[in-house]
Length: 325
Image: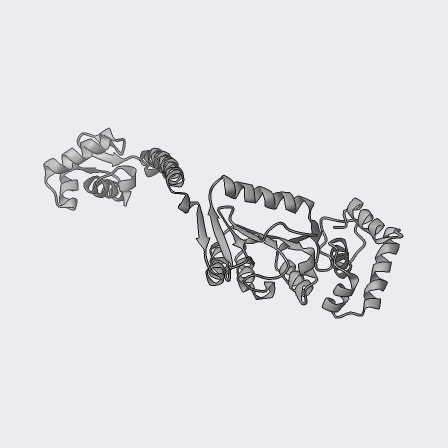
């Protein structure tokens, strides 16, 4: 058990006996351990030199306190292990870099079918541990967003999700409610008018994106897995740039709007405002929320009165200035 502190089996047995007995001589140690007196005498001498025992009388030894005798040894051993671990990590990175230089196939893996793409969408979310970044465009390739149950499970494990939705996607049936549900579970959602590509990035270590969707002579969706490389870094930078310019979609429970203390809106009003600013038409909002168009328009006019705005553009400007979103 104490091998990590540098003790062999006999030294550990002898030291434990000294700790229990308080002190002992070579003859007593030999009898208790079932070894020769010469071996016991050698063990005591070795422990004294190692700082594990001290001589308290002629031929009698007492143990040095364990935290004093063993603590520094463990610290030095841990430092050695840490240095070795860092060296291994450095060597592993050099090994991976060498493989990437010599074999480009390890950087980009082509997925030739919709089934393979769906399997990777599932696998990346199931294996994610920290964060998933998502570009969600209108018109699904593999599955509708409402069928992405892996996200719900990952959110339950504490995985962060930052998702940017294309405006046209938010207009698809059921999407407004689906986005609201994801936000309630912890998803951070934003919207833009248009996205350049579909994309998922898991833990900033691997990206998944379709390469060819609809082309002459192509019957299957072709996608790529992109691993650690300058290309992956570029895809992450693309996401972050889009995230900065996207409009936040807010849906919080009443009383939980902690980052906008001056905001006079309740949870439903915040969600309605975020959809308006994201460009979702009032007719679509009404349809997906199960409200009449007149009710939605009345609520929009109420928001405009609160903001002192004459137009929806002025409403959006006021919401941005006052940090309602």
